[in-house]
Image (cartoon, rainbow, N blue to C red; front, side, top):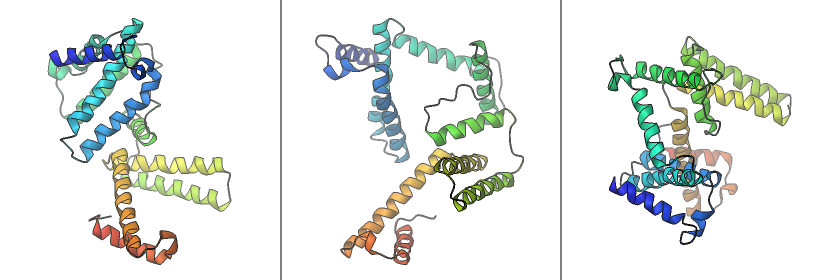
Amino acid sequence: MADIDRLLSIMERLRDPEQGCPWDRAQTFGSIVPHTLEEAYEVADAIEQEDWAALPDELGDLLFQVVFYAQLAREEGSFGFDDVVAAVCDKLVRRHPHVFGDDAVADADDQARRWEAHKAAERAAAGAAGSALDGVAAALPAVQRAGKLQGRAVRAGFEWPRDEDLFAKVDEELGELREEVGREGSQARLEHEAGDLLFAAVGLARRLGVDPEAALRGANRRFERRFRHMEGRLAEQSRAMTEAELDELKAHWQAAKRATDDPG
């Protein structure tokens, strides 16, 4: 707690109207949101890279964002850091009656269903409309938000009965996109159909037990490794990628997959 108190004191000093940091004094709730998102992604990146030495530093940067918001709120007289801590403590106890009460759960899946039920009850008590989709933040990355929306829909009972139904849905959406391209549809129609295809692909990934956001991040990393490998091989020949024919590029791509130990 002494370290937390020190952190809160540092934050207060940074915001001091006379002796604080000009940059920190100029910030608002809205202006630091991009920094919060960046810090969250840096935490995720450290974990995915298994960079355990860097993780405490990245987590500290993320914690600082919470402290920053709490300081802004305290200055406005709306809430403080203690209120943030109390809120999350109360929520965790309330949503885990099997740990802090007499309730019981069968397994992790059962707990996930109960967690969603607790959140739905809280939204209803707060006067929300009551949709199963309430509370899915609009600011989430699109792939992550698609997965959460689909997960909510499945838990509400809207689910395809077989894996094959999801494969068929992806094929259907791909076919509709091909048709739109063939008829030289408008950019708006192409965006519509491409979006449906991506949404269906997210649904298929979820059905197969794959986190679509993590899967796409992995695909990004593989592409980057392979592409950089191709650039390197061509640079050894003092050639630009635009100077290579497609068949040669395909060969370089396959070599890059083998060289970077990528199975796919």
